[in-house]
Image 1 (tube, rainbow, N blue to C red):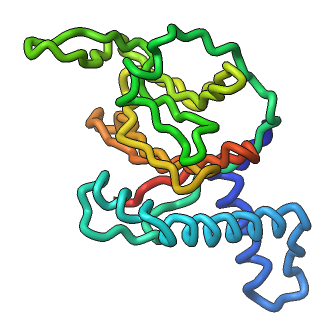
Image 2: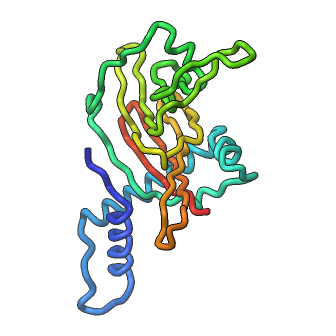
Image 3: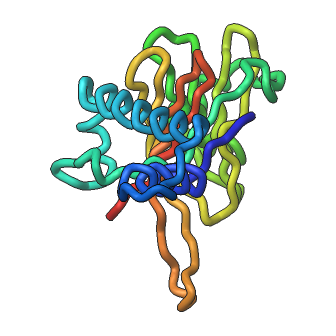
Length: 215
């Protein structure tokens, strides 16, 4: 797994800016790696913007964030990486009624080849007073996985403690899924700060992008 982080993206952008400004003899030359990373990040942001706003994903973002409109410029790309197709795929052990009981937290892709499981981990099915089955989250931890029902395999995407919460997820198309999560982080004054992150996952090419919502 080769991750490109916020720090590296920012360093490349600053380096690129220093190479672009000033005409002195000692002007540094941009390395191929730095330029490639800047161009790659720019291409990713542009393509993701098109993907988000050419379908109902943009509307979904506004509804989930409780905003009438959501400007793409307020999402900052903080990390992107690719993974091998077989990396960390594990057997999917599920009961025959798993897909029925956990339907509220299973997001099927439009072509039914993949599922984003945003909440079956640690959850139990209980019957409420009205006689209906409901999901009750019994674990403090959160796990999100991509399920491959035809192969009976699963792959963990995210695992976090009580500070991590999955807000919602939606499939933009048969290969791209978008997910919003929140993470509680204490700041220097010990006040709790909440980061909202947008995950975009290409499940067929195993390519991951993570954006931070600038409130």
